[in-house]
Structures are given as structure tokens and as C-alpha cells.
Image 1 (cartoon, protein in one colour):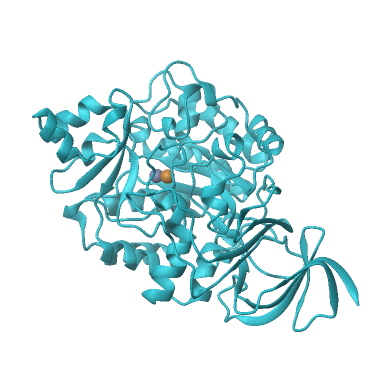
Image 2 (tube, rainbow, N blue to C red):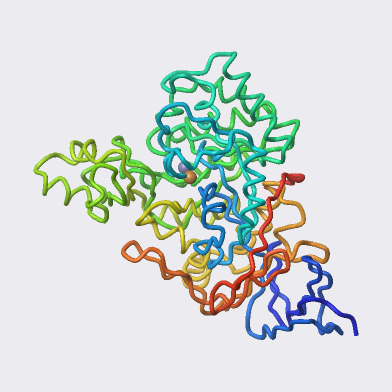
Length: 484
Ligand code: ZN
Ligand code: CU
């Protein structure tokens, strides 16, 4: 009989590849999966009987704003409690590093923290801080275009000059050399909206040689969405770089019903280049309060406001009525502020979520005092509500969207699948019971149905909650591999 650290017996192994589940024993040693097979003749220092439970690779949250969270709140409960074992930070053009602030924190970098939190002038300094904090989950990082603009430009309402773009490129290259996964942009935000396509095209150039990706919160998710997709695809195609469309959605009532066209555009691009997207399983979005998204027909919930903190939890309609002004005027007075916009159709969201090109990304906002429930609920909701209850996709397909697929696309080597030799990032859950419990009114509740979570072989969470051990690592870019 051979020895291992942990032996998980009789699990329904959903391996992350999309293949059907199989009942197997899984032996872990030194942070990795050492052997996988039926009825292993092993002795484990710790043994778990997983009969009736599913064992999947730990979930990879491809779209997060946990840049500061992994350092300030390394227990990372909102994510760990869902089965997430790896977060990708630095999305939507905003990243904790490399950042040197001069003056006010540009919107939406304030989603990550206050000015005092931006303490990482180089990517290496950020990586070091993550290592020191030893978060409970692994961390991979993108570099934000808006963060780079902040570093090198005196004002953000214009395109960068050639010299500024070169300086941004040099900083991006340094981060890529240090293991960054790629570049993200947030072109819809006013801090990047004035950047020309050429600016982003030039900035994305170093990604190809590094084997890195370009992820984009597009210039538009409303009427001009197809133009915005074409811009993103052109940036990828001309640079020969994979493109990931962040939180793909058809936002705004006038845009409802367009998911078919949008997915058709994605499929057309897939025929000639590497591209995919991520999505969260809710028909409401959340970000800073944007005057362009205030629409009397849409319920907009204010989650925080610097001048009016007492107003958090009320809708724009309530606030405007109480103040006797229009919603737009009320929104102006609330800024800077955060909001949840109930501005998508469930039908469109489902169609995008179910598409094979779609990965799962929470887009959760950990600094928000009244966060959108996606922060705590995304992954169990996909498994419980959209796979088990609504049968939008099978369990193996759902797991693939949150494990094997993102690991290949972002180049997270030896993660995302249950394979001998891979890192032992694992989640044990009850496929009949797993469900999100976080709601818009009670948004910080942990999911139900999680049995155990191992991060790099260390048991980090059980049905009773977090264990004392945090075992996440900084994950540098490996090789990306795409299957469309
Ligand atoms: Zn975004
Ligand atoms: Cu985002």
C-alpha cells in the first residue's frame, strides 16, 4: 500500500475537460494530484469519503477585481466559499499595478480601493505583496490599459501620443516578463474612451511574442456593440493575439434581444482568430455610477456614494423622488458613487452564458459595501440554477466553462483539469444541493452544497467554513492553448 497526504475516495470526478463524470479515487501528495483511478490501494494521512459528491478542479474566476482584496483580505471568503481556487485580477483596464498615482484616482480605478491602496509602482512589487499576503486562492494578473494611461498621461480625455504609448508598452513588457497574463482594457469608461483604436493596437503589440491575451471591457455594450466587437477583434487579429470579451452582454432596454447577432459576430470572428468571452449569471450589471446608463425605465440601485453614504440601498427612482429632481440630476449629485443596473434581459444573458465560447467570470466588486450578489454567488448559481435546475448545459459543460477552458485560454499551466501531476486545486460539492444564496437584498451570503476545497493540495475550506490554512500562489503565465 502506498502513502499519500490526502485520499479522496469514490468521488464522481468531473475532470474539467467537459467529459462525463467517472467514479474514481484521487490521491494528493506534495500539492499535486499524484494518482487517479478506481479503488486505489493507497493510504492517506487524511481520507475523505466522497460518495455521492462531485469532485471538480477548483473554479477559476476569470473576471475579478480582487487586486487589492487578495492582499488586504487574504482569506478571500467571497470566492473561496464558492469553490474558486484561482482569481484573475486586473480586468476592465484597471489593475493594482504598475501604478504611480499623481493626483486623483481615475474612475473606475476607485473600484479597487482608495488612493492609499495603490502602492505597487511595478508589477514585481505587486507580485511580492501577493506572495507575502499568502491569499487563500491563487492569483493570476492582467495589466490594465487605464492604469498605464494614468501612469504616463497628464489627462485621460485624449489619445496617448507616440511617446506615451511607447512608455506604456515598455511598462507592459516588464510586467509580461514578470509573468502577467496579458492586457485588459476598459474602453467604455471615460478614462479610456478617448483612447484611439491605434493606441490600443500599439499597446497590444508585445502580447503576441509573450503568448499573452487581450481582454476587453468593450467601448460599447449598447447600441454600438457590434462596432465595439469589431474593434476588439481587429486589435487581436492585427497583433495575432487572442481576444477575450469581458462580461459579454446586451445592455440597455433598447439593446434587448440582440444576443443572437452578438454571438453570431463572435462565431464569425472565431473562424479566423482566437476569441472567446466571459459572462456572469445575472441580468443586472454593477460598476461605478455612469450618467450615460441612468434610464428612467431601468431600476438602478445605488450601492455607495461618497457625498451621500446614507443613500446606499435606495434606487435612483426613490432618491430622485425624495429630492424632487430628475434621476439624471440626482445621479450627478451622488457622484462618485457605485450602482447596480437591472438593464439586461434574462433571455439574452442565458443565451450568452450557454454558448460554448463563454467562460464564467464573477466581475464581483469586493470593496462595495452592498455588493452585487455575483461576488458571493456566481459559480454555485451557474451549477445549481443554470445547469441543474434550468438545464442550460450539463454539469461537465458547466464545470469546463469554469476550469479547463479558462486554464487553457489564460495559460494557467497544470491547472483547470483533474489529471495526474496537476496541481491539487479541487472542489468537492453536492451536485444535487449546490446553490447560491446571496441576493440583491442580502448579498454577502455563502453558497450551500460545498463539501471541501483544496488549494495546492491544502484543505482550505469545508462544509463548516474556512480552515486555518491559506495556500494560494501567484500564478505566472504559462502556455495558452485554444480550442474554439
Ligand atoms: Zn468591466
Ligand atoms: Cu470588470
